[in-house]
Length: 357
Image: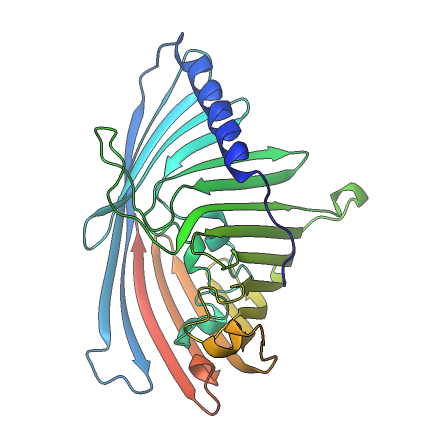
């Protein structure tokens, strides 16, 4: 169980908002902007996938375009905006301000914890991509289309990525300043932070990266504990070989989100290695183990928690060949105890051709 709790969160968030406002307003009020630039980039991928139990059309196409605009102020600070268009609509937006004190963004495009849920080396897919349930649940830290305040900076070679999301699951407010009418009765604010750096740099050892992350979701229902997640990952790269290991734990709390589905916590470990055969060809192997505890709602009410868990295991081989903006990738994955069900198996293979522009 994660024991750390945020205290005085309301006061802390008010202070944070005041600091962000001061940092934004002070450099912007008295300076004009230089001519900016607009860029358009994106990707297109067509894939053929075969998976146990699936009988539908195996061919799919995914595309995404990102429109970015940026300009620089007379004082050297920058302002940026980006908007992503996928197959459905424009869904991710971000307005950022780059200052001497770091970058502040108002964004609905991803989240720090979700970005590092599995960062072990891979040429294509992660080990658990064939599993119906991933090796760790980061859904509460995915951004989920909610507008949030995100701060990034670096100190002494360490990067810091922190985000505050008010009212998880509420989307974002309207453009006239009115708050959204959507609320989530189960959850309140989300706070998360990820730091990464090389702890051995002082000893002159390069290629090491340590990543640490923590997130907490306020529970708004009575007698329910907050949802917490912690993760740690270590990667080492010595060209052409990269290896890594990551561990993660999501604690749902007594009678929390996972109680109705029979879970108090999910923890996982992933190891992986990738090898660059040459500038164009790379191969990788990843292996994942994930444990999910089970606690019935009735047992939760009496404070009794079952310690037994089902172990989900997955391994994936991947190969990737790139030629400029063109990439051809293949992945073969096997999963044991899929959906944390004993003897449930899932095999999946994917061949994809993608173009980035």
